[in-house]
Image 1: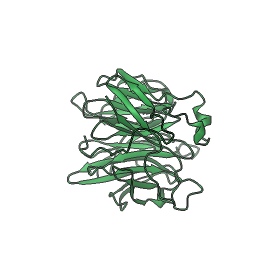
Image 2: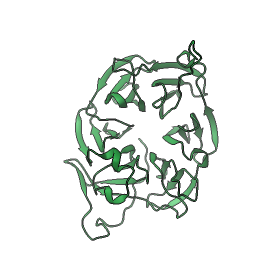
Image 3: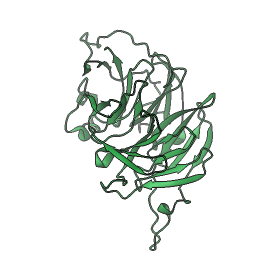
Image 4: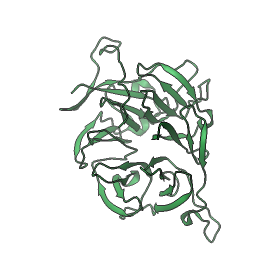
Length: 335
């Protein structure tokens, strides 16, 4: 797990003087800090899709950029105190979606899924492009059919295995997982089908390499099927897990806790065996309507549409949401 420093937060009371909301229970109880971080005046969040933390404790927020934003920077980087240290990524404006940070030797890299340009890009931490993966022409699953119809490719998230293989979830396209080696050479395709049959996927929106059982397995957020589905590294179906509703993505803490932002207005924690620990910040049933509304329609301590989340080194959690005016929430672990 990353060894970044935990964010420093000032005070525990809201601007009105009241205590901040508390979510969770027992050993998984958190104090809620909505609208974490100080955005530059030139940037306004659009839908906030991804969050990652590097080994120096810098927090990377990936968003689509609001129509009223002066800057087109879709990547905003904060220090642990919530101060913006840099921003960049105009190329991802309007398409910023999946974000993955991967350590490769002594270096760290960011991987982006751009749903506007329908590409995956690997960059260094300053945004310099190292590799671009476009339409997977090598895959038979993406060949044109007899009527010359070309399957849709719109990747949403990805994961990187221990040997550097890249597993890309085509969540908004044809629901396959497409695999490349670390150099970008095509290897395999699995999933697809858009049914609830074992081995098929319907919106593989998030993906992670799960090694909690002592071996690497591919865990997919099979979102439209409201389930988690496991595959071998070669794409063989292994098993299902549940306790999720419209799961978007994952992070895994060093103790084996699995963090799942559920789009249906909650954040879920599962143990090493994927048994439920807690659902947190459960929001209203009309979350899809609220996501286009103003802040007064976002009840404190309740989520609207969690889309991405990650742990810091102390077990605190960052949550980012698919809402038109963007929101970043920091959950400070209190027990």
